[in-house]
Length: 238
Image (cartoon, rainbow, N blue to C red; front, side):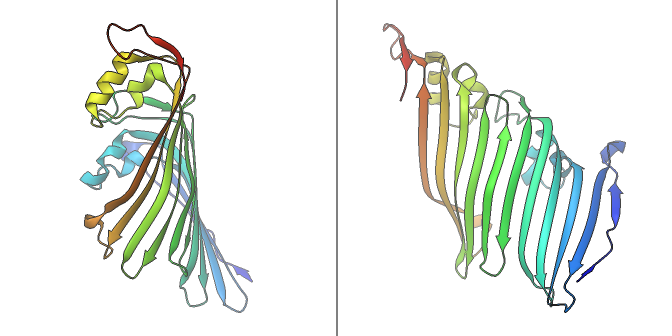
């Protein structure tokens, strides 16, 4: 086999900020039957993409330095057979004004996903975000068919301190339940999980629909006041 050149480049950050480092390398079989390429990116911040479209403006509040690796496998004709994407990140912060009332410090980010172009499938092995005490984990798998695309997955938020529940509960989601919970729950921890299925008929994202959604809550060591005149129940778990 052979190995192609490994060019490296630096892209300047916005407003003279820290540059983004990029390097690319490739390997090909001696008989030209297959080839692979790898791209490495360091010091990439999602907030850089916030001005590209109003749909991703929320990225302006994602201040985390990420490093990524993209591995591409192809046949001799240049058709892609598969891809593997791995992303890691160090300390940073996430701020979503109007959605989350608090700025969340991030300790680490770790993600891995694969794409099988021959089978028309994609797999999210993990998207893990560590906020310290609280952690988020997302997994899932998708498939492309002649009639559209489907994706099913699971999202978990683990070890939410009840005393900080308001920091993690999105402001627009079930505002009545949010108000009651913040006023009547105290102490302990909560785990929240959701299993979901999505589909896009005719490959049209505008028709994205939720086919399945199941939510689960696990709580322990919590204090609950059901009625104003009732004493608070302690050590509630379920």
